[in-house]
Length: 557
Image (cartoon, rainbow, N blue to C red; front, side):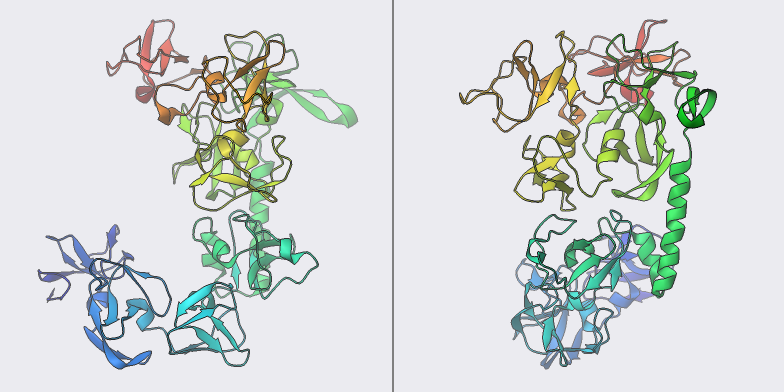
């Protein structure tokens, strides 16, 4: 079947073969079934979009016909739909006399319709106007919907909101609520964006946890529990409660599993058996419980110093905090929609702090999503208390372009509930105490400038520290100060981040070589060639001490 269509210079061929990966040039959405296609222009249309009438008389704008255009007819400029007030990027119905525009989806919008979030029918008010939406409190321009019985105006998108949503970050559903009447409602913050909520308007609310969110924040597709939303359609409240109970049982199964098997135990207080020798999934030898801290040791799980009970391999330089051993092999996490599996990859980049690590990760192989241990733990909390700031912090679901108050980098941040302070994952997970290989004493993280001279220098690089509000590491015995990036030896290539989450000297079994390989730090210019690809090993490499050869990290990965 061939179709001549105004939107393309060539005939469009009907293709009944289903497939994914095609986007409709009429509405912008994906095409899952058959389509009309022009291979010369890489142009595709849903059959429903291809068969739209070129001209129509619409009751919303009855005085003039509306003409279908391939794109907004404003000399390259975008336009806004007069009904939903959202940008028009694809096909649009346009009245040239009145500059009236309609999305092709809004063309089929009924003039009167029943909604989930209000008991009365809403009526489309067929006159362009400015108004304050009585649901969200934000000004609207266009065609509002009116409730004649209650006398309020609402945006089309607000009228179409679901009565309940489920966020990955929160255990319970959030219900569409008329308002929260309480003594201190004017001080409420959205738990998702950490900005003020005007509780005189509608919000999404969890009464069990006193958890409130803006309408836009709660319905943002990023972070929505899509599985729950899909399965909850048409279900009654009692059925939803049972769904959540089942999810909680699944979660309990995850968290009650062990990532190790017990080899030996000893009796503890109250007849509790304490595992003193275990077999952990990530290491080939048995690990023994000890508290002997003769030298500075780094945990292979979280890549943090060890100051308390830990498990040790007597044959290798392998150590795990007792708390890292006790982590569940699987868990759900508010930053991702699928369950995450505990594993020990070679090298990976954490999707929260963006640092490269060779410690444990919680990973989703389906989505190539990974979190290092420290980030996986702090972002589970609705509220973060950090010693570097006096007020509570809440993880913000806003876009990843907000600036950290400590380092000025942009990314995912925690926002202060009372002031303008923000903290990214990289700074939130800086270890409190560290060792620098060229200094005999430990360094402690400091959060305020040490004097009021106005001069702040790093004693490692001897350059001025950027800002007195930026955190720094300090050796009190030597009065020695340093940038965090200098302590962790920021490498040549910026995409590596720094070395804070890398434990050099860790050994791995790899299929590229018959002997165990050790992770080593190379010079910035490279001093060894990879035994597999022949390239210089830069920054990081894997070395075999037996054969005196090296491998590029990419080849071992």
